Every structure is written in C-alpha cells, then in structure tokens.
Image (cartoon, rainbow, N blue to C red; front, side, top):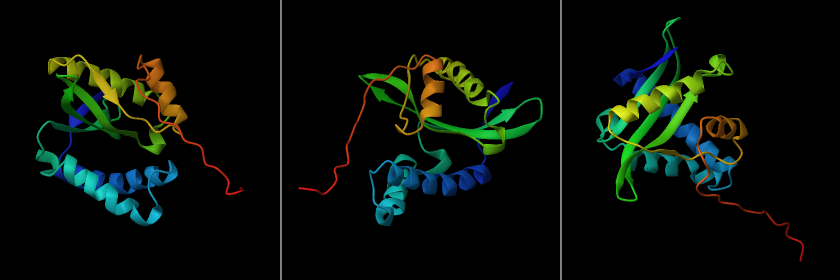
Length: 160
C-alpha cells in the first residue's frame, strides 16, 4: 500500500534538478524542442510554474512511499488550476523509480491521488502524457482516463 507524503525541501531540490533535465529530454525526444534550447526552455517553464519553489501556491509535491518497506518509490506533483471555470487537479509529473516499476505503485499512487483530490473538493484530474510513453498511456486508460486532445505530426523527407 502506498501513501503520498508531502515533499521536504531536500527531496524537492533533488527532484527539481533531475525533473528539469528529464522534461527537457522528453521534449527533444517528442520533437518539440532542439537539444540546444531544451534545458533553458525547461528551466523557464518550471520557473513560471513554481516561482516560490515548494511553497508555490496551489502546487502539491509528494513522495510516494510504500508503507510496508518503508521506502520512497516515486514522486507525484499536481496543481490546482482552473479548467472550464472550475478548479481541478492537473498532474504535472509522476514517476515511479526504476527499481520499483512494474509492481503496481503507479496505479496505487493514482488511487491515493484521487482520494486526496476529493478531500480538496475537486472532481476532475487531468494530465498530459507524451505520445511515445505507451506504458503510461495504458495505465491511465486502465484507471479510467480518457483522451481529450491529440497532437500529431509527420516528419517528411527532403525529397522534392
């Protein structure tokens, strides 16, 4: 069984450093940003989202812990933001650490998140997932998430 534990400053700084780099690389992999600009763009986006770090308004950062070990098995970050005139939860990041994957921790973390979000009086959870992340997409669908937007692209060869 997992629990969501609010991050402390040390965990937050460790998370932020690795997350910005990972986010930059995901955008490069998805073809959204060039490798040269990715780190700076990722840093700018994070600065806009969490200008006050861990104390940023409406931002919730958790470590995911296995109560039976006890061990930190991952992280989860969501924010409360406006969606169609209603406050809702938006998951910015979730990661199960490599050595703990494929054990059901992701599913359990989202079930714990649902309970937490309900206690905040919210009725919707949204998220973004990169198209190439098939495992995450499958898990979200299993949890009942539905696709609300799809962006597609095609790379053309330079033959005329």
